[in-house]
Length: 241
Image 1 (cartoon, rainbow, N blue to C red):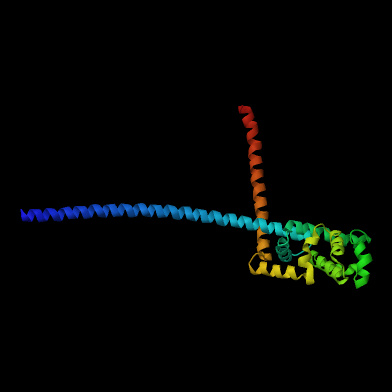
Image 2: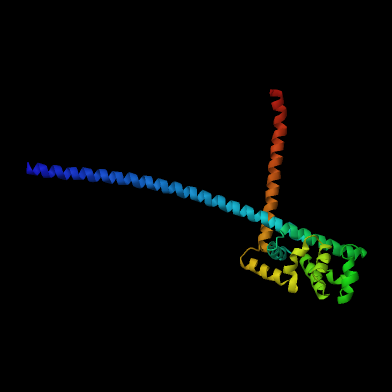
């Protein structure tokens, strides 16, 4: 009886241990499945995030290329100026429009001797010995800086500066804090933006432009494919109807 009791207790312990082991194994399997599902979801979310981030960069690079071309500036130069202008409430689109208007008025005076820059060359330029030729080979931002420096050199007060700046492009008065001291504000904030990695380099912009072009071609190819299929299906569907 003593032996039976001991053997019985031993086998009961084994059964309990086996049941505990099976329970542990099932729990491990369940946890592994949960972790696998979570990792899969995490990977999918990370991939979706990367795709969205890349698409955003392509869009930004395309906009930079367009705005830089409009403003008569290099892509990196424009981004530096746009980063600084944003600090005084001027968006990069607004800045590109301002520089475009400025360049147009410079070109207008060089061609006809008239337009929004006429007062500057009649009243200011003779005082400081500057001619239209000085603006000829400058980028949009460089030309704007030279214009402001000339007004500063002529000793104009705030109201007079506002008049001459606004005659070239609207809201350029807002850029005065950045244009002072030879454009020190533009340089400082542009340098900080570049140091922070916010300036896309030419290689990245070029790659983004090519990607954008490829997407454009692919979208139009799909549109053509759909049109081709539809043109063949429509008569058949019409007969069927």
